[in-house]
Image (cartoon, rainbow, N blue to C red):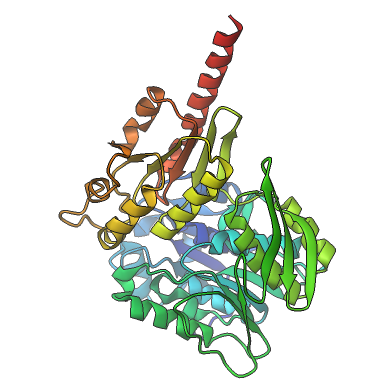
Length: 472
C-alpha cells in the first residue's frame, strides 16, 4: 500500500465485493473506526443485510452512478476489492482510471496488522475453525485480541472482534491468489498443504512454494507451528521457533482422548506443560486437532491453563463448520462448508465416529469448475465414504463453465453400489420429502446452505408427525 494514505487520513472506504465473509470483517472494522463505508456486491444476502443495518451502504448493480458522492474523492477514499471480482468490473475500472488507491483485502489487512502481533492460521483446510477458536481462547482470557475471521463465530455472532489494548491480532491467512504474502505474522499455524487453487498456481509444486515463501514472512522472535507430515520445507528467518503439532504426535498433541455420549475430553500436551481433562465445546473429532493448534498459539502467548480449559469448553463453533441444525436421537442434520476432498473426508469420518451405527447421507454442491475438473476423482473417493450421495450442479462463484465439466464427473466415479442421485438444488427439498434420512450432511461452499432452514423445518415436521403417529 502506498505511503500517501494512512488509516487516519481515510475518510471513506468503498468495497467491491462487500458481502464476502473476509471482506465483511473489514467493512465492520472501518465502520467501528467511524469511516463512511459503502460498496457493491453481486447479490443480496443475510450478511449484506446485516452490514447495511450496521451502517454500510451497499448496492447490487455494476453502476458507477450508484457509488456515493463521499466515495468519489481519491484523496480521502480507500478502495478495497476481492480477487474474485474480475478486472473488467466497471466500478473497479472507474476507480483505477481516476487515481484512487485500490488494494486487495489482504493488502489492507497487512497494513492494519503490521503494527500488532499477528497470529495467523494458514492451510488448505481447518483454518477457519482454528483461527476462530484461537480468537475465542484469547478474547475470553486476560490477554484479549482483535480478530479478522473467515466465518461467523457462534460465540459472538460476528467475524470481527475488537480490542483497544491487546497487542494481538488473529487472522485467517488465505492462500488464494497468494493473499497471505501480504501479511507479517508474529506466529503462524499451518494446518494442511493439500493441493488446491490450481487454477491460480498451476502446479502443486508452485502451491507448496507459495506456502514456503509465506513461512519466510514470520517475524524473528515469533514461531511457526506446523502440522506433522506435510510436504512443506519451511524457510523461516533466524530467531523463529519451529514446532510441530497434530492430534496424536508432535511438540503439541492430545493424549487420553475420551469420546462417548456425545462428549469429547482430552489432555493437552505442550513441550513445557500439560492440561488435563479439557472438554471440547464442539465435540467432533476433527476439533481435537484444531483445538491442539489453537491451544498451542494461546499457550505460547500467555493464556493460563485454566483460561485455555474454560475457553475450549465454552467454544460454540462457527456457522457452516460442523454446524448442527438438528440433533435428536432419530434425525441429525449438519451443515458443513467442506469444499475440498480432504475436508469432506475429515467431515464424514468425524460424523462416522459419532454415529457409527447410523446411515450417513450427504448432499454435495461442488464449488468451482476448475476445482471439479482437477479433483473429481478425489471428490468421488471422499464422498464414497458416505452411505448415500446426492449431487447438485456446480456452484460457479467467479468462474465461467468449462465444457465437459459437470457434477456428472463426480457421480460417475463414486464407488460401485453406493446410493446416489443427481438433482438440481431447487429439487433438493422435494427429494428429501420423499426420502428417509438418519444423519444428513449438507456439504459445500456455495449457496446450497441457503436451503438449510427449509430442510430443518421439513425434518422437524417429520419428527413431529412421527411422534403423533406413535401416540395414536
